[in-house]
Image 1 (cartoon, rainbow, N blue to C red):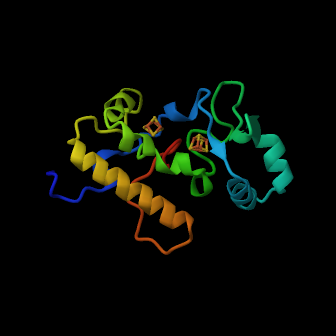
Image 2: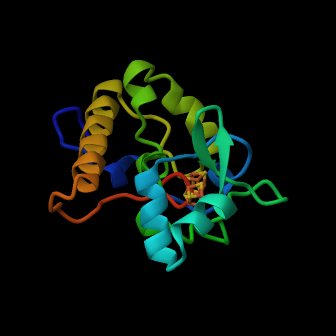
Length: 156
Ligand code: SF4
Ligand code: SF4
């Protein structure tokens, strides 16, 4: 892999389904659109989803946690994978990496799916592409096949 070679998300990250990123209080924010999608996906009333699976965090809503600290939608894998919130879909290709690329190596110490030693230019280009792909997909524009996923914060 060189900085001249376009790099896919899969080259830098392959989720191991360990669930590490789906536990602990991190605040997985959900929009009303997310809640609507989750309700449709689970075939449940929207109000039920919001009241049962969401919690307030400041002025926003986050996905609730179970008593064991895991996200309510974690059960050996993400049970709402196709409709999980943007931050879960994006992981580990998050905006923060564009501001502080050094965080990639730190994240790799907690997420076994992340390849730690990546040239910065390759990393930044890949993060930009992955974020653009996710946002285009969320906007309903037809997309090429997905190349990477994370369970928890990714796309298992
Ligand atoms: S994204 Fe990383 S931490 Fe989360 S489940 Fe996959 S391998 Fe584990
Ligand atoms: S990936 Fe799924 S299980 Fe993990 S935090 Fe996001 S919604 Fe919850």
